[in-house]
Image (tube, rainbow, N blue to C red; front, side, top):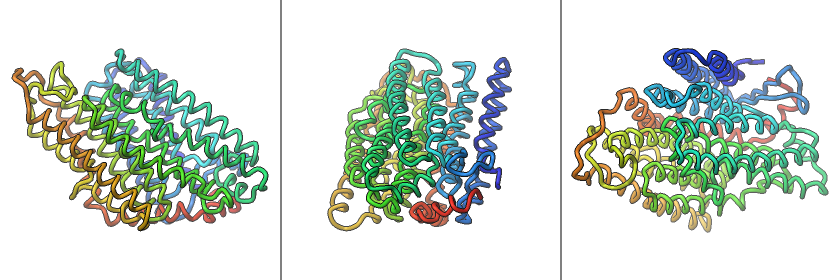
Length: 500
């Protein structure tokens, strides 16, 4: 049994608890501990990625209790990839926070570590109830992080976020309870085996439970019509928190992929691929609504929040395609959109700090102290997120568009994606011209950006360039991950073979 699977959980749990127990530590000490712990997650995730690269599925049963009784963690290519993506994003977000944003409250770094615990746990768990537990851990930490620094806007946005997610948690618990009552298990692989052999009379109830958890995952992923909380919440959060939240919607999309390819996948009999017909219209409507919202935004961070919604719609379209090529395109676009969105949230904060009272409002204002530097960073981020060559957004969209079958799906998806890309380009061009090309007559008021803040934001934005440079090996990995996801019999054999 390879205990390395537990390291992404044990490390943030231990460090977060340590920071709470020694709450009176000086801030520099807290920063050093948090930076070190978050940085260590990167080599650990690389190690797990290399382990998962042999295509062996690893099931870690705590206490060696086998399904359906034990708590199980599962490592495959997809979970290892998501762990590494989270570690990279969190590393630069905490670096940015250590330059002053963590001074607004005493427990920022402890909450940050617990947030990582919840996110990593959601990616690693092989158990539906523990998925609920890790959801609650990451949500409780995110409630506090969202309100970090106080402010009326954050309280209003935080209340909407908290109430909606509490409703989602209640529905999730109901759905999980139904699945347990009908199958007698909560281990995802064991549930998948039991659903495939379920009696016909319980199939309608299993389908209802499946759709109930789909609604919950749709709320987490910010799918239409459940996305209205996201733009204001992300805009109200501090920059490093908003950057880390770029992975939060991906947790919802990850769970949709995991549950609806494994439990309700190809081996589920009459319930096989039950969500596909719903995901198509939801994906296209979410994408269109995100573009419309971004076009109407008057605040830079709110606009970026709507661009996150656009990425959710695009990713959901790849999931709805359901093929190996569609999932591979969605995974590539997921990596791109997470890194670039995180970088843009950090960049928006750098811009706002140099605009005085106008901050991130998209109106003509004072000239920036570093227009060339910040303008170049904005240009790279805008081109990448709009899906124009030569950056990673273009490659991700090409992979998605090539994956869709010719006929009605292509006739629907191509115009929505391409016209949506045009709308994003118009939105970002308007924002760039107002911030960089139409300065007002007011004197320059901001200070030069902190170099470490610039490094954190630029590093995430350059992810769009690195993804192009490493496109060939990355494409090979994600295609293998998509193939592994669709090989449901390979997962079912894990229950028979026990823990790896």
